[in-house]
Image (tube, rainbow, N blue to C red; front, top):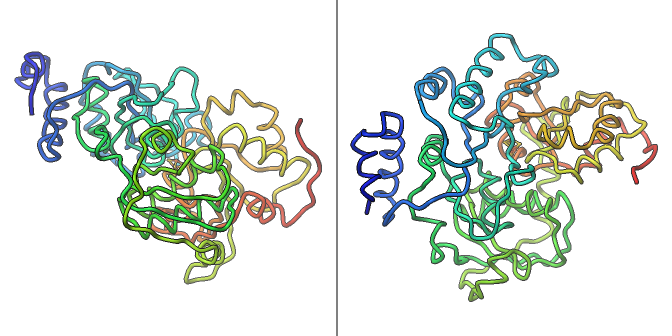
Length: 400
Ligand code: F3S
């Protein structure tokens, strides 16, 4: 791999131990995957934030690092709401460790708004063709597929290394030739909302890490594409997908149809909705917002909950910035007894582990909750989740 004189000096430790370690990680990855050089990145998004997932070893590693990031960098969800961790009954011991992790990242100049939807935040603009080093799988999928930016599936340490250097190794999805679709997926039945999460869940299992191009009926909205990519990245390892006539690479790059073609039937999606864990339990906890809710998803949740009272524990996850931007939606949701929670999610928070069955409207959460939280997961659209949360109380009003 070619290194500039300055990069050689960093490699030799002339810019300090933290940068030496950072470039060593990137060069090792570049050598494994055949990168020719390091390329500048526009931003980094760093996973490995929850104390639940990184533990004391992770906290120690981050705390030992020094210096400042060279590009805008932001954190993935942590294990708790950083301003109100008691809302989900997080222990003081966990909260202290979690605060220490976030402080250690903050010291490096990283923005501590912990979200998997950084592309919705002010001042974190990402455009077509931008090179990034992001490490949360749904954010990666959205950036690559819906925005047309370029990022590999970075791990937490490699994204942090890239942020500290302002560069990443030039391989994988940074190269146009690796963004070509390898399999075509056709869906004949019309889809809406959580159908896209169910489709992603089914497709990810079938194609693993291949790049698919979808042929869909209708025009999916941004939130639906977000759900599709998040689920495919969880049940499989898809980091980039295209939708014919919709996503930016598919519109600009004039792809030939791949030889492999899969047809996904409506009945396969219905199986996701009907699937129950071995115990066949009734949901005790309802969660919405994986990936974190957008403004329109918050609005819809507020409309569905307005004037009702939840009879089951109900958590709605979003970024702190969107919580602040839409107080009227938050008020309507919280008046129902549902909790709007920021900085964390149902998968990376230890709070979910207290429940034995969780209802979700996300294909990603549906895939991860059993393994990461030890609970059965049940899938439904947002209406079904709220109906379950409120025992079917009738809707009272809407927002205009
Ligand atoms: Fe985001 Fe957590 Fe889902 S990080 S994509 S809400 S598992």
